[in-house]
Length: 259
Image (cartoon, rainbow, N blue to C red; front, side, top):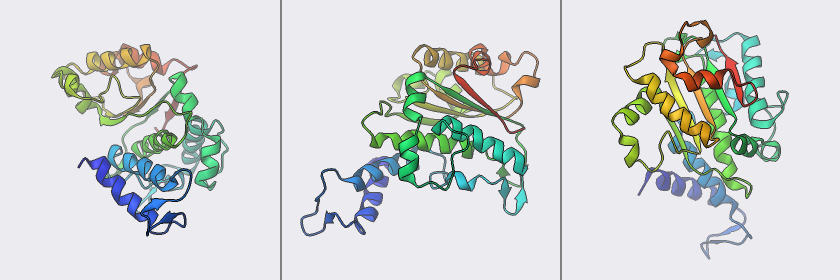
């Protein structure tokens, strides 16, 4: 059994244990559509795709405080959430206390996918102990919203990949991606995590290969850069020419600074 199937069965069992529509005697849902099954599928993908510990987080968890220590000032937290909410819902002032049902109704994630809108989150990797400032958390929240769209008929995206830059670069250099059903080039939604200033040989060309294909196919990419690319000379030698192109494309890219 795959990890997705295992997570799906566990979540479906949990949901059906308290569902008023599911008949335990018949072992069947009495509704026109089994909502428990649809939700369980999304949750299973979220738990499998996202980094460990991030699948259960919501927008309200991004506070800039980690273990009692403020890692991001309150003004930056507000600005960051505004940018993420604008990307996900088309409104930077959306209340994060809205119900999941209400958030589904105003989601812009189908539009982001259909238009190939990218998101780049960057900033110095400052940490308190082992806890970073929250770039990966924000990227995970975006990917969660993308996965939730599986429940709706207008959704056209079904594959997701959330990987660190070194892993993706290794996949390209070793040509391992050719044997992967879902890889950095073809995933409907891709998150490239942890692009650091110190890079391995071949990083820029590997990223160029990934991004050039995704741009041609209008596939959205969420990118986390662990430094300020606007302050680096010849930054294309680190992140590739196509990533630099995305950074400057105000029409199709949302850029968020957590420096």
